Image (cartoon, rainbow, N blue to C red; front, side, top):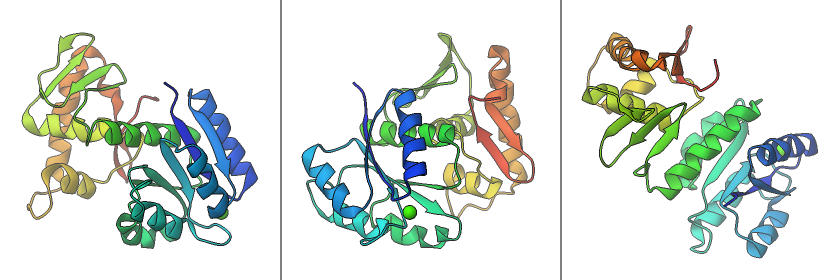
Length: 229
Ligand code: CA
């Protein structure tokens, strides 16, 4: 079934560009120009996910997110916030308001679609417990099994966790420090070079399937899982 996405954004060119990309990705797109229109649209037909611009006339995107989060009828609808650079400081507030992810403007629609899919997957599978299929890989979280074209991929526990994180957070660059936080867990002292070692092993495990290029090095920034070369 097609996923229904509500775009709440007052800038028509962005709204239209996003709606076009979503329809091309086989999703249904509706839009609202402010919080009031959004509330009306949600009451009419609850969406599967809301793309919410931070800066809206009237009630801000963050206030709208808070309001939706506080209402049991809408609390479960995942929200991806669209922010401009510099608004990132309010991440903490956004987390409290139940925001699931952020996309910083300007963004590519390919990245946005990938992030929407990842958030929808997490929302459905209750934190990625269902199998994830991406880029020719299939990762079955309950069984901790990874396969490529039906063939099992042999991974160590750290490489498995790294790949699981990447496949549930695709098309996005993570620094070594962020990967340590997410995959190794906070509070553990590990050198950042450790990440490189495990990335190398992960690529080595994917190489027999010619899928090692999914793990991309972004010079000066970190690593990214991407299905685009
Ligand atoms: Ca705006």
